[in-house]
Image 1 (cartoon, rainbow, N blue to C red):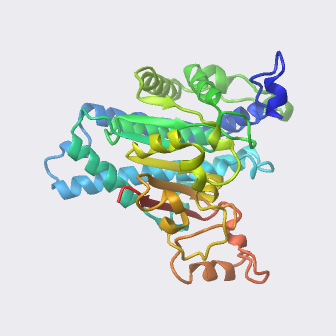
Image 2 (image 1 turned 90 degrees about the horizontal axis):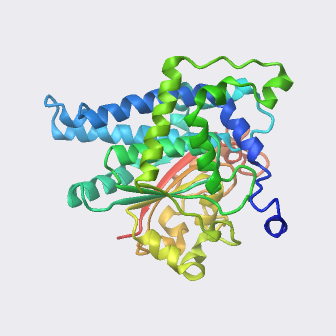
Length: 369
């Protein structure tokens, strides 16, 4: 289908899913405003030096623990942003989306993270920061999944990593073509920045969906508009300075799993080896990382990564809300426990608990060892 569009005169860059992406982001207003306020507060603290690191009443261990908790918070925001996958949310209302994306929903969902390797990932970035000082380039890559609200929270994470000096460069990897409903394309980042550049117009003017439903959007307050404008200036500045980079590659929409990366796209493989940490977002990236195979659920994540595992030179962090059967790295007996729970699929022999996005895994493999 993309070939047909590419060969046309007027439809070369047409994204058939663009309207759905921007509609879902607009519907995420409540969570966007909440996170914009949190982000501005955090960044101003980091930039003014009033964050935990300058608190003389704390020991170095307490400061490090506070910074680790902040890293965990930012990554969990990024993780649960994946719950707004358009391929699964077609029947949800505006109010449903608000409930899914707020801080209370994220807090309630903490118990649903079945494996949490975030401390190990933080330690890797912190060691690199301590070893290299502020001047050496330290890169984090994020292989993106969905546009709309999820791209927004991915950008929150990227901006935080740069502001906290846990990375000096963040490379975002979008898809090169419209592939599956809400996948991020390079233009989606520009669309996001444009919305934040003029938030009063974006959120204040009725969309087509608003007109059809008879809903009149509430104007933004001065504070809300200022906080969204801060995001625009901050992210646009990182992008202009070359610290926040978009790097699409056709490999991400190719057939087969990521085990083939070193053979099919060796330049991309070598590029990822130079990164301190490569974060893979979402369910499909997880399935491709693990070969989309029916592993025993207790199989170590590093084993399921195959050529991208131990000694690959690639440090992998998967942020995945489960939407398919494939899962590895679970404690013994956990899969059986979840299957036996209501709706878990035990009576059918299916792993239904892993289909809805309710449960998540955050798994790390240090391929540089």
